[in-house]
Image 1: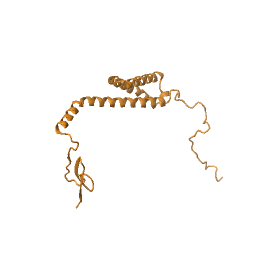
Image 2 (image 1 turned 120 degrees about the horizontal axis):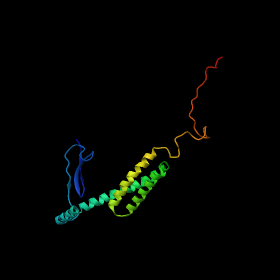
Image 3 (image 1 turned 135 degrees about the vertical axis):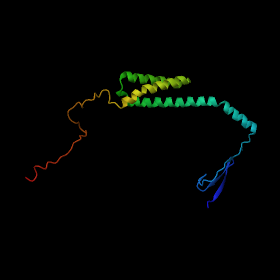
Image 4 (image 1 turned 90 degrees about the vertical axis):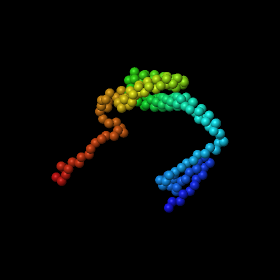
Length: 169
């Protein structure tokens, strides 16, 4: 038999068993009562105001999310450009830098469509940066190292084989 205890909260009253709410599989009921002193008309007025502002709230939320995404893309693209910029052609690098500048300028203003366009453009041109990150540097040429042998401190991969043919003769 489990012991039940009553937890009383000024806003809600609920029954909990020793393992937490509903852990025993028994029915659970929560009763919420207003303790703010608002009458029914005030509550209805507040609900209507919230409903009337829902569209504006949704638009504002979308704008904030777009700004955050654009800002994050600018930051990550700047870091990737600093790390892998040497692997890009001059035209690719210039296109990314121009898209970065446009996105930074768009983020300073309030024009949501401009932010959206600059975010899409930066996303498009940053793909070449992602592809370049997997390529060798442009000046590497893909050929062997310039000198014939290893330099001081280089690790040489070799295998040691013991010659046993001359032993015991």
